[in-house]
Amino acid sequence: MAEPRRSPLHVEGARAILDYDRAVFDRFLRKIRRLPKAEAVRDRGIGHLSLFGTLLHILHVREAWFGFVVRDEGRREAAFFGRPERNPVDWRGFDRYAREVWAAHDALAAELTEARLDRRYRAFWMPGRYSLGDVVLQVSFEQAHHLGEIIGALWVDDRRSPDMTWIEVQRDALGSIRRR
Image (cartoon, rainbow, N blue to C red; front, side, top):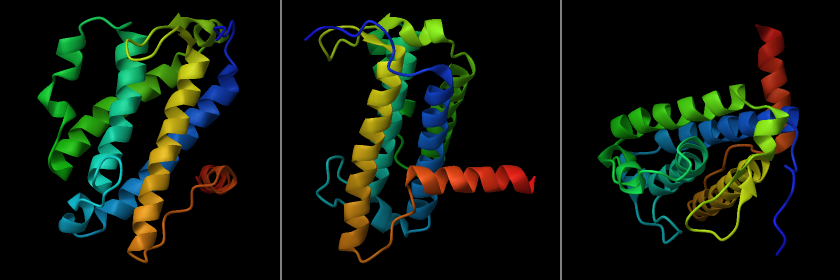
C-alpha cells in the first residue's frame, strides 16, 4: 500500500474532529459515572470487558498515538507504557490519568499547523508511516468504534446512550458558546 503524501485534513477540520471527540467522550463518561460502580466495572464481554475499561482504552489509544508516537516519536517505550498511572482501578485514578491525556490532546490541537499535519510518524505496532492528519482520524475512528461497544452494552441493559452524532454535538457546542 502506498503511503499517503499529505494529510487528509486541514487545521480547521482536524481541530473540529478533536473537539468533537472530546465532547462525545465527556458525554459517555458522564453517563457511565452515574451508574453504580459495580455496573461500570462489570465484565460485559465487550472488547475491553467493562464500560470503565473501554473508556480507559479510549484514553490509552489517544495517549499512545498523540503522546508516544507524535510527541515522543516512539522513544522510551517501556517508560511510557509501563507507567502505573495508565491503569487506574477507580474513578479518582481515572480522573488523574484523563486530565493528563486531555492536556496533551489540547496542546496538540493548539499547536496544529498545515505542515505539522503533513509530518509523518511511525508506530511500532503498525507498518508504514502516517501523517498526523491520518493519526487524528485513526484515533477518532477508534474512539467511535469503542463507543459503539458501549452503546451496545447500554442497550443490552435497556439504557439509552448519550447523543453522539456530529450535528448534535456541534449544535450543542454552538449553543453553549452563544449562551456565554
